Image 1 (cartoon, rainbow, N blue to C red):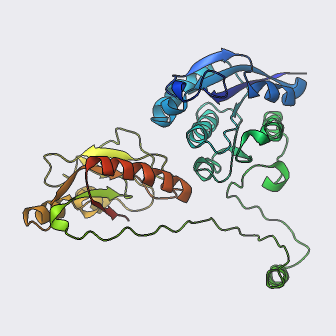
Image 2: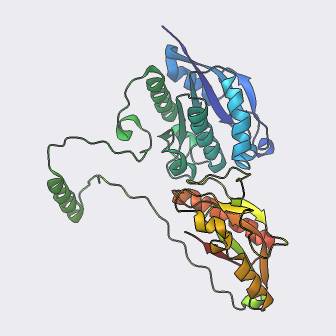
Image 3: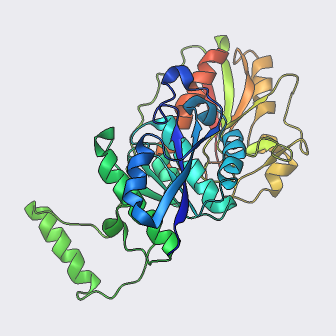
Length: 349
């Protein structure tokens, strides 16, 4: 009977190489299982072995996901694995992003069955659960044993070609897929039963769960626009021609930051739309239709605003998960604050 080869991805902390002091650690390979990988190996039993552990520091990977993947995936491929496990990351944000990216990258670029583990409430979960199997975990390491057991079971089913059950049966996050099933009761009856249960305060299970959207309190108004600089931010995916930083056209996991120094307007041909959600022709002809740099420069000349931010901040809003958007917004706000602007105009499609 064949023994499958598994590569395990860990951050520096779980690989026992240090804490935040080693968060900038570049990717490296450690032979065999390390730390929680030993428990993963035990859960895999004789069907598979953890042949190597790929380790990368949280900061090193999260600060540039594309660079992280470029360096991590070849290390994984060199081990000739049959499958990849990443994490579990629990509620660790940077680690979760890395685990999701590594598992999805191994599956999409290397063709390897993969699984990641993380807390459903963390930012990476809604971003990656549609692309790769993400096992739901508790928010802390107290769930380490059960989480690795679920990850091992799911990984083995994939490499062995065993059909997978529903998210409820297997313990992975819903992937946004719907499958037709024959039900004993018609939809109208099920709907009325759920409504009666809700009114009576009895437990019930909806058939169409809705995403959780956290309301955002508006910032107070700016008292005098003539004294402050205003930045330009867009979810319309406006990037330099050719998209040199490889930003995603949908389901964004990072944003671009591009200098506006010396530009009175965004020239067509030098900037273009990279976005999966709208027709680009007219924006590509004149990117100022999406990012009104020309209008803001005129307002600054008139003294109606104090100035224009030095950079354009951009991403594609299409299909970007609310939790990921919140994380990117917080990072972007920190950059804007460091730049010294007092407000921003956010344009969309």
